[in-house]
Image: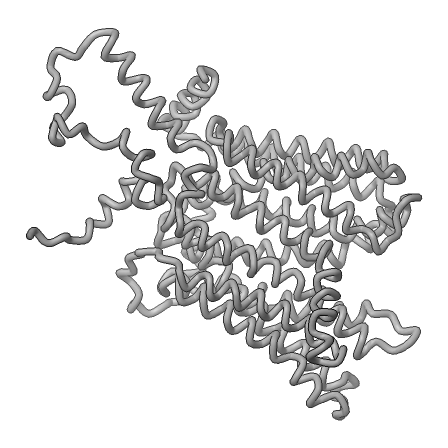
Length: 510
């Protein structure tokens, strides 16, 4: 029997059905007919010419293009579903973790009549420092390490750290203070620092793994789920974090006597489930340079230089930074928005954020199903203008519930239209050996973009008011959209321009 040998990597990279896990029915249109036995079609049928042959070619090309449109192919890709499932549990755990810290502080460290802001600011600083220090550094090593062990271990270790918090806090509950702070709070700061550090390695590894398991043709619908999950976790974590933690505490009352251990167990289990799911992932990556020693600063400079040369990638990163800044600010402003509305209390700001989550879900499905018919720059500009209009509308309806819910929903929908094509552009334009460096830098600036508005948005609203702040955010989003659109059109190659034209004509014909 003839032995079955592994396929060369160049064949795998050129075969979308292998990378994306499409079914046999999806890829059969690309394979040669058995009758031709792999011979060129023109040689097998020399008399097939003229208008009928051209029409047949057109229909065949349209059928092939149609087979790669929509969300169907990625839902048949088991590797993608594994990675996405791990992302869902990991991202939600990340965001609920901050809610967990607030709950622990309010129950164990906040004194009567004392504001909680100072304690929470310390946690936020501990969470932000690793993003600044290690975001780019992590990307350098991700290029040299296999992705699967990084994805699995970072989640399992984070789960263990969170699950061990109740025991550590119990051991130090009557201990001395250090620099005026209880030892228990220092433990929270240290654990938060390590969890954030591990996150800096998980995020670029996850982003670099996606193009390894999904074909380039299906990157846009894959990113429709990936990017929306990442953005929605910011909203969902804050909106449902407190109820989820309360439910976990109630469920474990028979075991812990109401000590509140359930909160930590929930977040730790979420990280653990993510790690266990990712054990099933197969990337089949080739790491020719795994043994190569990392030259940290040189590699970081190479990543920065690559962004300097690749205007489309650079502008996409900038637009993602703007996008995440807006939604981090919205998470803060929603509290004030709920406070000034007659029908809501400030503690019910989650209803407003949930509307953005619904809009994101609708946008994700729409982009995954129909987004391949439009160029990335057109989607980015259209989504940015839609976000700007929604933010301006919010500035005029700050005391009316239903118009605000509708506008926030449209804001979420347009955010998906912006974020998904931008993340796809970065993956498409970045070669495999540079992905870790570029995604590390991206995560570095995105994490800063998520942290700064949490501190600045509240102050800006206090001095300027909701209407002015929403107007400023609208201007920021518009500038980001125009920048990406102008750069994409200025740097488009003739082949890319032809592809955009062909795609538009194909979409119009259907």
